[in-house]
Length: 122
View 1: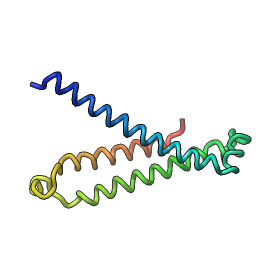
View 2: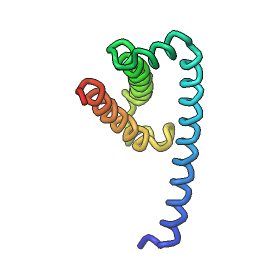
View 3: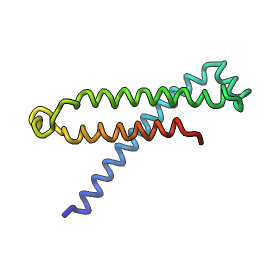
View 4: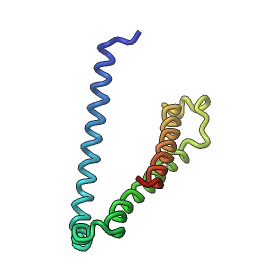
């Protein structure tokens, strides 16, 4: 039986790590926004002609596409790492093999959902 104290401690640690990761992601995205806002043409164009296709949709679509490509690169690298490995035979050489394989599966599922999100209109 799982103890309530153990669940509370595990949740506290997990949520703390999730919050820390979110703060790091926020800092990275803030630096990217600051960089792209320093481009005068993009800033002026977005404020003056934000309703047009070029500055309305493309200024949002380009970073989303770049993030999607980087996510695919990460998922494919992890797939290449674990492609030929059988977890039942590699227990000694490759610690937590099943967890890494699960991460590969979730990464590709998330890639599929992100692709659907990018390709479907609002």
